[in-house]
Amino acid sequence: MAEIRSTMDMVMERAARLAAEAEESSGDEALANEGMRMAAAFLSGEGENLLEQLKSKAPEEQMIIRGGMAKTMLRNILLPRDQEISEQSLLSLNGLQELSGNSTDIATICSELKQILEQYGQHREQVKQQFDESILNQLKMQLQQQGLAVDDEMALNPTMHPQYQEEWSKASAELNNQYNDALDQRKELIGQRFGI
Image 1 (cartoon, helix red, strand yellow):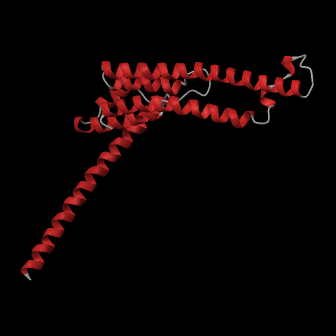
Image 2 (image 1 turned 120 degrees about the horizontal axis):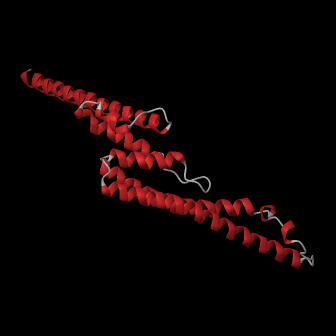
Image 3 (image 1 turned 135 degrees about the vertical axis):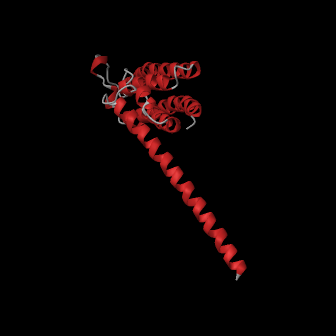
């Protein structure tokens, strides 16, 4: 009977340890979520200075909250939909630099991220122009092969080509993947610096 009791005691002790660890990790998760909410409010223009908010928290909570803030900032650095980098991405880059205490390595990586975002818009526009010209040339050749004269090149619209959307989607997705990979590499480096 003594053996059973000691095994039972060991099981109960282990259960108590697991419960304590679960409470601790759920507390950490709550703090990280609080940091994410603070950063989201900051990005939407509702929050105040991130460092001031962070300093108002207990010192033992600050690292976890800071990590949550950084996660939200990193998630909001996205490829632009048009030529302009989104305000969210720029705010996120500035917020990350601020959270890092303006550390030079974070500033360098953020500068690289901004450069990638700027280059993406320009590169996408160049690829689109080349793609449109290629389709336009295909249309001209098809018309010439049919014996039709191409008097007004302006009347030809490359988007009218039957495979335009499908081909442009492929080319665009390939370009997006290349740039997203470059962004992800740098975001991962920043995440490591913030311990997330």
